[in-house]
Length: 198
Image (cartoon, rainbow, N blue to C red; front, side, top):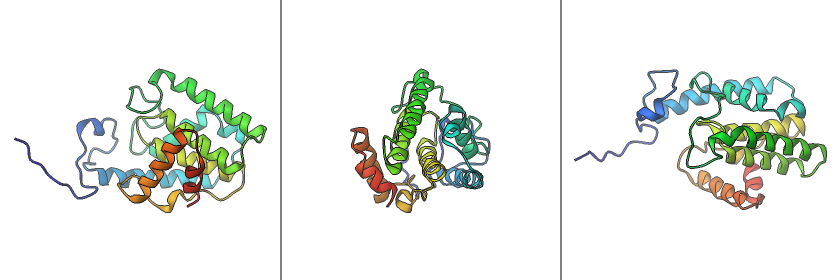
């Protein structure tokens, strides 16, 4: 008979699968993992803020992988590498490079031909990118940072606020975000665009 233990938020122990690929052996709980990841992500954001990028460089597989690596390389050995297993969400692992190439080609076309207003273009890119689910973990935060890079570096507009909250926990803001993502899954981007600026 197992013990039914209620853990305080962030104190849930990581299981062995979740520890696979961790660079820091002392991380034992979800809260500790979140803290180390956040420090790494902030370093990546500092790197992004101090640079200029053009669309031709942003819309490449190398850039997509480099941003993920910069966000997570201090924490995960596989940072920047496409996932090698299938998940319950995302494209089949073998289709990731093709799906990403299609998205990047679409994004170049959208940008050159001004198909969508700036906010919609960035949000559509973010949504398609997270739907592919390129990496073992961190896809949501990675896709949001990519949208911020697109909106700021290409369109010279302020970055998105994304509800001005941490979206990793169980909160009303996360529920609103997931509802917006589900609407975008059905082709309606209005809620996600509104959430991005909330």
